Length: 83
Picture 1 (cartoon, rainbow, N blue to C red):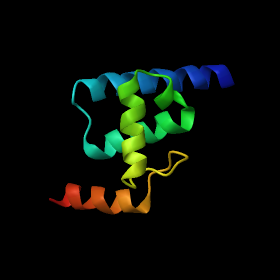
Picture 2: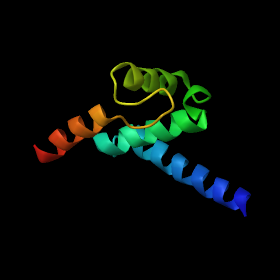
Picture 3: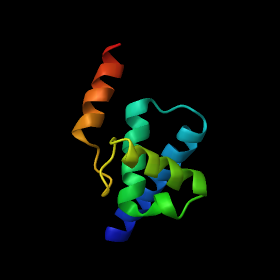
Picture 4: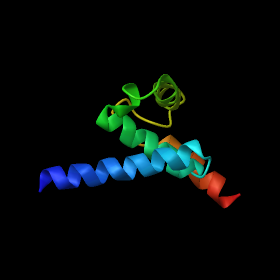
C-alpha cells in the first residue's frame, strides 16, 4: 500500500513539474511544489535549475531548510493573492 501511495505522490509531482515548466502554476503552487521537492530530496536530483530555484526560495526566506513553507512566504503569498 505504501508503494502505491508513493507512486501517486510521484505522479502528482511529475504533473506539477510539467505545469511549472509550462508556466501554469501560480506563485503559491510554485512555492508548495518546491517545498515538496526539497522535502523529498528531488530538488537536488533533478536538473540543476530545480536545485538553484529551491536554494533561492530558501535563501529568500520562502522555504525553510526542510522544505516547509515559511510564515514569511504565507504573508507574501496572501498579499499577492489579494492584489
